Length: 86
Image (cartoon, rainbow, N blue to C red; front, side, top):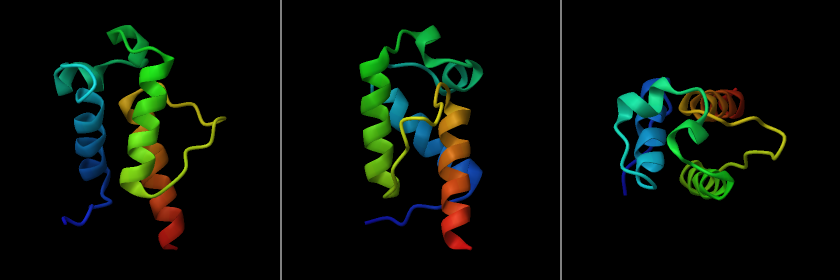
């Protein structure tokens, strides 16, 4: 089993990999949008993405945390892991 890295870059790669497993969209397009709904994702897709990332990173993303884009997911996961490490 591989160890997850917690650099922003490594997290971004994992987030893109998880999101692109739902729809075949290039990483460049995923990273360039501010809201995944622009690429055809609906709320159920986003919930499934959240669940997959929560499991992968052993964390909980609260319902009140706005996660609309790759950057939103990366920022939350990175800051959560940084906080937990301190």
